[in-house]
Each structure stands twice: as C-alpha cells, then as structure tokens.
Length: 115
Image 1 (cartoon, rainbow, N blue to C red):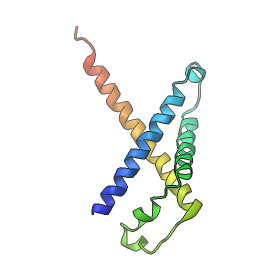
Image 2: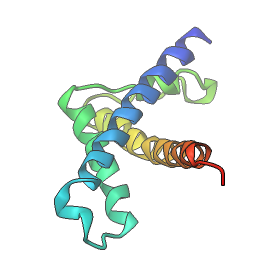
Image 3: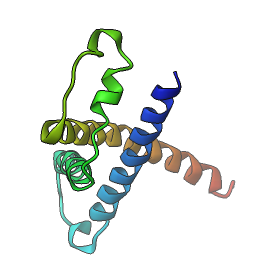
C-alpha cells in the first residue's frame, strides 16, 4: 500500500499544479469578458497535463498499473507513458477544480456578514 500512497501523492500534487495553471489562464485579462465554453478549459487541462509529463519526462502509469494485479504485467514506457500520464493529470485536475470551486463558495458564504 505504500507504493500506492506515493503514486497518489504525485498525481494529486501535479493535478493541483495543472488546475492552478488553467485557473491562471482563465483569469488573464484577455479572457475576462469573453464567453469561452467550459470545453476549452477542459481541453487546456489535458494539454497542460501532457506538457507537464512530456516536459519533465514523467510517467507514473506503470507505477499505477502495478497496484492492480490484473494490470501488473502491462508495461507502458516512453512517449506513450508520458501521454497517458498527462491525460490522467488533466482529468484529475478537473475534479480538483470543482472541489476548490465548491470550497471557495462555502468560504465566501461563511464570510458574508449576517444581517
């Protein structure tokens, strides 16, 4: 179980990084008054995730697969491993965006003065 905790920590950390990069882009002045569909931000999350994994040559797919006995013999290396890892980061970052958005809404509601 220790190996899974390490893989999960890497995925969480890098996904939060991807989430904040997409949020930064979303808040740039160029996009403030533009009606941009949510699919654009979802696509950007996948692209940023792939760029992070390819740029750092980081693949955690094999580590993740080794935690599942049925997939433990699967060995994905090289660019395909980087690509799949980046797509996983992009997908998980969508979850973290929604989570942080919900937590921000709760915090904002709790800070409003009561009348």
